[in-house]
Amino acid sequence: MTIPTTTPRKLRLPTPRNLGYSFGWTGRIGIAIIIFWAIVALVGNWLTPYPVGKIVDWDYFGGVSAKYWMGTDYLGRDIFSRVLMGARYTVGIALAAVTLACTLGVILGMIAAVIGGWFDTLLSRLLDAFNGIPSLLFGLVVVAAVGSSIPVLVWTLAAIYMPGAYRFARALAVNINTMDFVTVARARGEGTPYMITFEIFPNILGPVLADFGLRFVFIVLVLSGLSFLGLGVQPPYADWGALVRENIEGLSLGAPAVIFPCIAIASLTISVNMFIDNLPTKIRDRAE
Amino acid sequence: MLWSTTTWRLIGQRLGIALITLVIVSFAVFFATEMLPGDVAQILLGQAATPEAVAGLREAMGLNEPAFQRFLGWLVGLATGDMGRSYVNDIEVVDLLGGRLQNSLRLAGIVTVICVPVALTLGIIAAMFRGSWLDRAVSVATISVISVPEFMVATLSVLVFAVWLGWLPALSYGVNVDSIGAMLRAYAMPVITLSFVVAAQMIRMTRAAVIETIETPYVEMALLKGASKLRMVLVHALPNALGPIANAVALSLSYLVGGVIIVETVFNYPGVAKLMVDAVATRDLPLIQSCAMVFCVSYLTLITLADMIAILSNPRLRQ
Image (cartoon, rainbow over all chains, first blue to last red):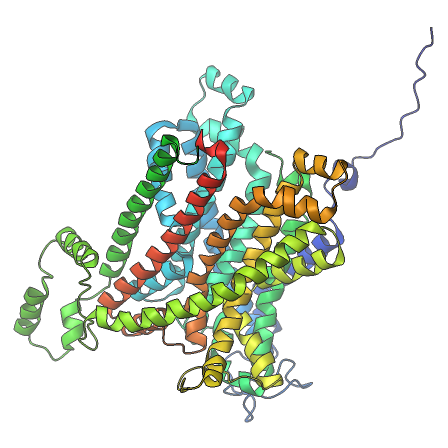
């Protein structure tokens, strides 16, 4: 009889790589760009070389130069300063809206999954109906009705994307709800608030965060679209979509004033997508 | 077995859900536009109007009736084709919509005819040669198009085709469409932009649908028994992926609804979306409501169609 020799186990340190939490290089580039825009959104007003609304150049649609890094716009204002300040509106409004949408959606979704019954059916049907309205159209109708201001934009965008967040969180929570530890907690007599905060939520957190990121991208796209139509952020403020709209006349001149805001939007949305796509499976699919 | 009672029941159920959704959506559209601050009669008559005139107009427009009653009246009107009169230019909304709808449908039709074959071919090829440079190139291109706003695709196409290459006019308004060449040039930019947006979605979904089928055991079996890759995909996998692909096509066509709003505005194309954006600018409520309903109905039709195709093509959903 042979005694199985114990091979000396290789020491495995709990580094992110060994735990399965490391990112691919595309994910790292993505997160770097996201952090860059987040910082710009926070401190952008101290970085602008010129005051945002100030006409600094007599020449409109000026090209890229050492003085004006991204050229000048249709009034001769510095585009670099305007893009830096635009980050605040685009990122800020989108972040506020997505936070509202996901918080409300996820809480309602978890409650629906835990309570079930007619509450679940009714809420799901109602919110599915709202999913049947094309998002940009929803925005158009609301803006037509109540006019455009930043709080209106935040709430409208949140309302558009809340049903989707609800549906996603509910589907995940329903799965968790059938697990044994949930049954045990229910047998212990725990109430709904305890169930959703301590039993369900920690177990759907990863996928919910990934969904949060994707929804952020959708909101940035719809917000830019609304601003581009002139129905989003109103002058004198301008987000990136509004910057493209203001300078669209410069398109036929190939002006940098219209190209750089476009690049800003694309860099943000593509990097969020890249980051989410490369999230470690351990975070993204933990509930599956 | 395709038309068993279960199938009919499921289809009926889906249609019922679509109908309920439509009612809720029309409710939302009606009351969102009713929230307009200020009095419609006052706005129409201007600041100088006497209170009597405003009261008279309110009475004539039926604004004194309860909101719910007006909602029902509006709904019945919609169903019978009476959409009210435009506030701004006092023309029947139906007359305003008719020609515009035709224009938008023509645009959507051309885009569909171009997109479907191109997207299906690219999607299937990308799935067949998964992981190859072609697949990666297609994936990167589609992700880039999906992650940027529609107006950016439009802006870039103008920049490339009209400004740098100089092949096409940047805007389509005011162009006489009396010759084939002129018509082609007028439609080219909106069609190119919309095709990019819709095709990107369609390619991604088609690729995913085909890959899912290729990974099933029976397709692997076909490969193991020695069938060529082409035969494996075309004969074994594709017939079973047709349902999901048709579903993907219908779903991606629903992106036309959002895309068309931006594209018609950018290129000044005289369609329903342009009409609606202009109506939003002038706060012409009956027009906004009707346009919104046109969009919601087309969107819902496409989504419901996609669901029904999924039900019909998957026997497991019918049991």
